[in-house]
Image 1 (cartoon, rainbow, N blue to C red):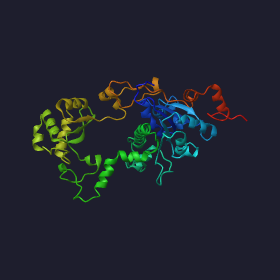
Image 2 (image 1 turned 120 degrees about the vertical axis):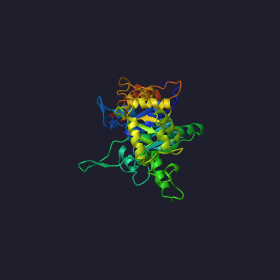
Image 3 (image 1 turned 60 degrees about the vertical axis):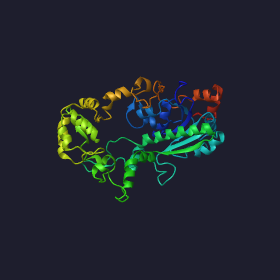
Amino acid sequence: MPVDAPLHGIRIIECSALGPAAVTMPLVDLGAEVIKVEPPAGDYIREMTWPIVEGVSLMHLHINRGKRSIVMDLRTEEDAATFKELVKTADVVVEAMRPGGLARRGVGYEQLREVKPEIVFCTISGYGMTGPYRDLPAHGVAFDTWAGIVSPQVNDDGFAYLPEHASMGIHAGPLFGALGILAAVLRARSTGEGCFLEVAQSDAAAAMDWYRSETWRAYERPESEVTGNKADGYERREPGTGGMIEGVRYQVYEAGDGRYVLFMASEQAFWRNFCEAVGRMDLFKRWPGSKFADHARNNLALRAELRDIFRTRTAGEWIDFGVTANFPVGPVNSPRTIAEDPQFHDRFHWFGKDQLGADQLPTPLKFVGEQLPTPTRAPTVGEHTDVVLRDLLGWDDDRIAESRARGGLGGVAAS
C-alpha cells in the first residue's frame, strides 16, 4: 500500500457476513488495511445474489475488494487467543453481523479493550442493538421498506411486489459506519481512549430520507406555523419529490430522440435565460413566475408548450444548450445507460475485470493531484492466513502448524 495513501497506517480487523462488510470498503479504497476474519466455511456472500461472475458473486468481488482473508474459528480457545493478539496490532475491530456475536465468543468490546484500551469497536447490523426488532433476521431491502423509502405495488394479476429502486440502507449504513470509524480513530489516537460504535442499516436508511419524514413531522404543526413556500401561495405540498408531480418548470420532458431530460428552471432568472435562448420570450411575459422555487404547478398550457419545445432537440443537444445558455437541464439515465454518459466517462474510470474479477466503479472521492491505490481482488477464504500471521505476529511455519494441530486456523486438532 503506498505510504501516501490517505488512510495508510490504519489497520482494521473485520468479522463480517454478507452486505454489512461494505462498512470497510470505502476505507480500503483510501488505503486502510482490512483483514477479514472468516470461519472455516467462509462468508457465504460469495454465493449470494446475482450476477455470479465466474463462480463468485459480484457483491463479494465489490465489497470485499482490497481485503485480506484469514480463517479462524473463534469458538475455539486457540483462535480466540490468536484473535486478541491480532487486535493488539490494530486500530479497529468491526463486527459486521448480528450484534453480540463476538462477545459470545469471548472477543467482544469489553474483552478486547483489556488487551488494547484504545481499540475502536464498531458493530453494524440490520436493526441495531436495541428495540423490538433487534433480533429480527433481515436482508437489505427490509431497511428501505421499514424507512418508507420504497412502496409495494400490485401487478396485473393482483400480486404485490417491490418495484425497482435504489437500495438505501445497505449503502448508507456502511458509509455512516465508515465516517464514525474515522472519527473514533482520530479521537483514540489523540486521547488513547477507544470506544464502542454502533450502526444500524435501518437507521441509516431513515436518516438519508430525513427530508420527507421531517416534512411530515413539520406538517403536524398548525398552518399558522408551518406552510408551503411563497411560490405556491404557501400551500403545503407533498414532501420531497412527491410534491413535484404537478410541476411544469421543474419536470421531465421527452426530447426529440426519445430520451428524457430533466428541466429545472424554477428560479426566475433561469426561466428567463431559457425563454430567451429558445426565442420564446412570450412565455416569460405570460408566465414570469416568482423569483425562487416556482415550478408553475398545474399550468397545463405551459406544460404543453414545453413538451413541444423539448421535442425539437435531442437530449444531448439540450444538455449542451443548457451549458451555453445557462439554464438547468439534466440527462435522465438508467443504471444500464449511465456508463454511456459523457460526464460519467470523465469522472469514473472502471477497475477492469482483469484486476478485480469484474468491472467495478472506484470510490467517488478524488484527492486532486494524487492517485489513490488500486485495490486488490476480493480474497478467497483464508487466502492470506499464513502471510498475515507472519507479518503481524511474527509467526514462522512451525508456529502456524502448531496452531493448526491444536484445532486453530481451521485445522483439525490432533487426537
